Every structure is written in C-alpha cells, then in structure tokens.
Image (cartoon, rainbow, N blue to C red; front, side, top):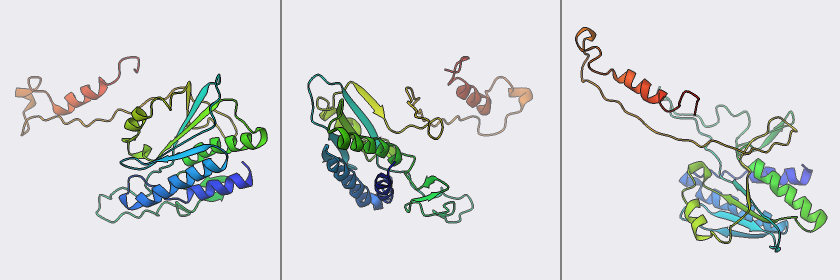
Amino acid sequence: MSAAHLDELLALLRFPSISTDPARKQDVARCAEWVAGKLGAIGLIAMLHPTAGHPIVVARNARQPGRRTVMIYGHYDVQPVDEPARADGEAPDPNKHWITPPFEPTIRDGVLYGRGSADNKGQFFAHVSGIADTLRERGDLPVNLILLLEGEEEIGSSNLEPFLAVHRDELRCDLIAVSDTGMIAPGVPTLTYGLRGIAALEVRVTGAASDLHSGIYGGAVANPATALARLIASLHDAEGR
C-alpha cells in the first residue's frame, strides 16, 4: 500500500462509526459521506442512500455491454470499544485494554492498530486502493463493478434486505466478493470461498420447583441439566454437521 493510500486509510479509521451507539449516529453518517466522496474521487459513480438506520454507499463504473458484473460488499461500521458490564458492579473502562486510543490508528512494529482496521475498513479499503490504482494506470476496469458498503453489519443489517429488494435489478451481478474475510498469513493473498453463518438461540429448561430424591424420582422425572445437555448435543449430528 502506498503512503497516500495509507494516509487515507488512517483517516477512514479515525471515524468512530459505531452503529450500535445512537450517540454516534452523526459519526456514522460522516463516515459514509467520506467513503462516498473517496469513491467518487477515484472515478466511480458513487451514491449515498439513506435508510431508516444508517446510510448505504453504492458505487459503480460505467457499465459496458458484454462484461461480467462483479459486486464487492463491505461495511464501514465498527464494533463498540467498551468493556462488557462487570459482575462486581464497577464501571467498565472502555480504554483499559487499549495501548493507544481505538480511533487514533497507530502503526507499531509494522502492524496497524485501530478499531475497524481488521473489521472491515481495512479490507474494503484494500479493494478501493486497488481499484483506484487500476483506474489511474489503465483508465478502465475489466468488469462492470458495483461496490456496496453498508453501515449496519455490526447490528444485523436490518435495512440491507429491504434496500436490496427495492434496488434488485440495478444491483444484479454475476459474482459477489465479500471483503469482510481474513488472510491465511501476512503477505499471502487469500480467497475465502465458503463461510458458515451464525445461529443464535436462548434455551430455558424448567424442572421441578424443589429437589427430588433420586431414589424415588430418579429416571422418572428428567433432570433439567441432562435434558439441556441432550438438546445442545443434538445441534450437531455424528459427523459434525
């Protein structure tokens, strides 16, 4: 990454675009505006789409008939930096485990530290930098490109699905590359071709209101702990599926 690209990435990381925090709504909006401006500056047609929550940024090049269309997806919102609530009642310290402030990105020993640098600003900006260099050097891209960058990935993307439904035809593509993945090792280009989703659930098992003597009730009345263990074990079959 060139020094100019690095400076722009550092500027992007300074936005405290925490989508879960209502107090940061304007910071999230300013980050979206910065991203749209950057995409327009490199030669793409960029648009900022308001939603019921945080904006979605869509950018594209001039469509050429006969070319395949590739979409790159990413998100510019980040996780909060606060510690979780403490059991002892002591107020959490949001900066306790940060050597440097989370929104003051710092390079130490060749590694960039800052909230969002690995999820997902760093990854999608790597794509943006490559696109910028290609457009500057060649004046064109070999594909029809769509960049879709949302601001609600960290809170479930509740406004993304209705947005996609409304803009279905104009966002139609042949391939989607998700920027929000990792690398096998430093300096090793990596393409992730499969990801598992997350299934979250809360299970409550209710048993007797008081202890039941195992000599009398054992086996006749299910132990809630045993029932819960069987339920959890049943989430996967013998082959781990």
